[in-house]
Image (tube, rainbow, N blue to C red; front, side, top):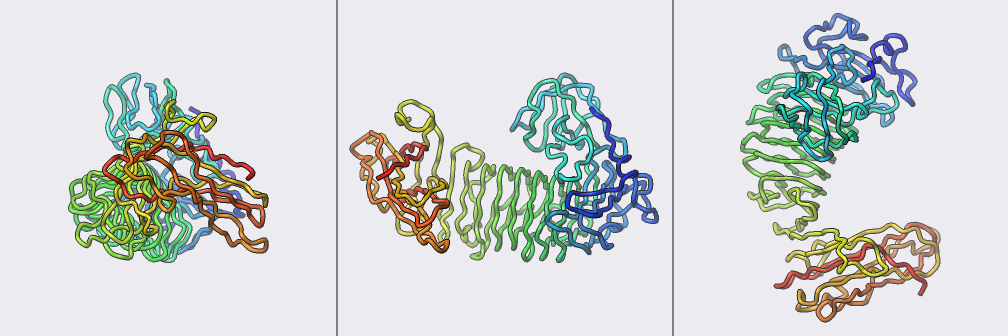
Length: 525
């Protein structure tokens, strides 16, 4: 492992970001620091984060917080006074660069596996234990890269260790998927507050902040982090611990827009309370510890959530309580309960789409916007020869639709695909091929229940688009051959044409499954 040189670099040259004329690095040590110190080196570190956040800062300024230390007394609400920019956020980051020379390198080696929480070990660990963090050489920069904010993207918290290896809280997603990797072992995230302490991080009109690698605790009903009128926040590698009764981890207030990556929450009445704003949440573990609460509550927000596990909540894993919920997109979300909307008011998400529902590849679900019903369906890829079209693509898509699809209105449609295609002004025919075993259908889908369409520029002078739909119908009841749906379109100006496909037939008693060749065919009529 290369030697970390960041302390020397900072002391001799200061701190500069790309696109940033001047920025300053500061340092905090919750145990050994002093707020009477300068705060500009590890040897003159402050003791509190207040010294950084409650004084005016410039875009690009960063404070590094020493790992393994806890601030548990004399804690007050953390207030913020400054704005970063989209090019240069203001940052609070745990030490990922061995600034205090307290990291270790494992004597044993590991074999990381992508997508797995378990990392096999060559021997019992002498340095890597629960609560510590690890990364593998190649997954982190050896010194802080001043033009990239995510300099250690694949660091992970250890849940437990055994002679066989390490269990992580989150699946490993890094690039070191070979045997014989030494681990860099870091102390635990720096801890701010205690679970019973009624304090919070209060962002109120403070924009473009990046929070990384902190352990934030407390009972404040506004959340461990409260984002109010503060768009442009990113929270990564953080741990949130509540009291099991009143606390939230992150509370999205008015106009909040935040990216939340690789967080772990524990013992909250609501792990993420998205009352307003937009939440983009990826690779997280929300553990309720059996509390009577919700994993994610959306009362008027839009959520995009991917690769998360929601477990041990007494109410709903995903709760939309109220007609103002705007819905969202959920990919590979593992939950304990099949109920994903509020059972008390029967107000579901408006247009909520679940891909790979409950961690099952290909399993999907669509919550219909105005009613409390949903439609389960599955979409899989296959390379089996009987379901591949001769001369077509190397993969087909298998679709097994649900019972709540219908042609009455948009809420009952299932979008099968959307391909952006750069098209000139020539007249072209776009075809997609489908087939199905004939014994699965009683009646064929009509052209209002199954169609493809193209959306293209209809004017040579503006960006208005026209949608033209196919008019043909497929014979699934009497034929097992590949059949095409085709649409002919001629844009008025060159640009991106969107080729889409929709299915909207209510499921019969049979399975109604079918296959789609994923390769579009473009021809001249």
